[in-house]
Amino acid sequence: MTAGHEESPAAGRDARHGPLITTTFGLYARGEENWLSVASVVRLMGDLGVEPPAVRSSISRLKRRGVLESGRHGGAAGYSLVPSVLETLAEGDVRIFERVRAVPEDGWIVVVFSVPESERQKRHELRTSLTRLGLGTAAPGVWVAPGNLAAETRRTLERRGLAAYVDIFSGEHYAFGDLRSKVRSWWDLDELAELYAEFLARHRPVLDRVKASGVTPLEAFRVYVPMLTQWRRLPYRDPGLPLSLLPPGWNGVSAGALFDELNAMLSTGAREHALSVIHVA
Image (cartoon, rainbow, N blue to C red; front, top):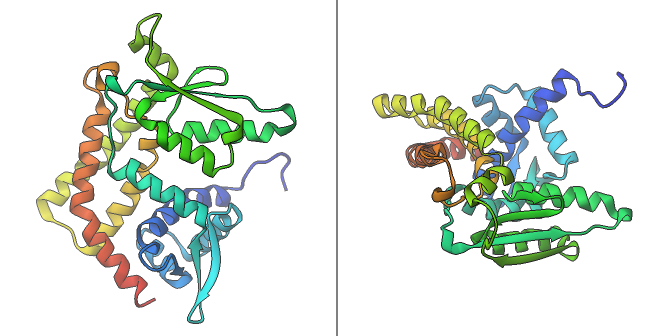
């Protein structure tokens, strides 16, 4: 064993497969009493080019991380999403499929937290939670977001047991300085634009190909699950800032439109294929 915390190449591959498995459970297990058999997951991941040993290793990793839990249905071995992950996915559906862009009239929320030194782990949990909600950093321990994220921020912090460390304020930017410049310092818009550019470059040709020749249910599944896996992290990085505060020609708009079109064209066929596997495996 090497020193430190380096992971083996196999562990790194498992970590990459984990998001595909999580996406598959989020899409198809919830409509199947929140359970998929091991056999069906192995077959579905095989359709995505993942070998069975890697699937089993990734599932074990997700179980250790508290994403999946094991259980048997009718004598068959399988896994379910844990309740907290189900709640997160339900809220995530709104972010992913029903994106709402803020307008200047929404104002802002400011989140301030204070954590005792004896509970330093809570500080890490807070930073992770706020980052995943898309909040920007205005100063150490001071986070900001468009006002329309207030309710979601409150629910998330309450659900994760972090509310006792936090105050949330709402209001307008009163003074000083140019708000567009402030936004660029609170969020890494260049990095976000690059992520959107990667999505566009990878999936625009896919859309053209689907429009030109159509897809079978299996082909739809093979395109849709990886596409959604890449996309689903972006709405959490992007808080949906008003367009007036973003760079001209913000590519998040065209990326969102591309996702919506691919989702409309592929989701039904992908589900048809997934269920054909789930119901016979």
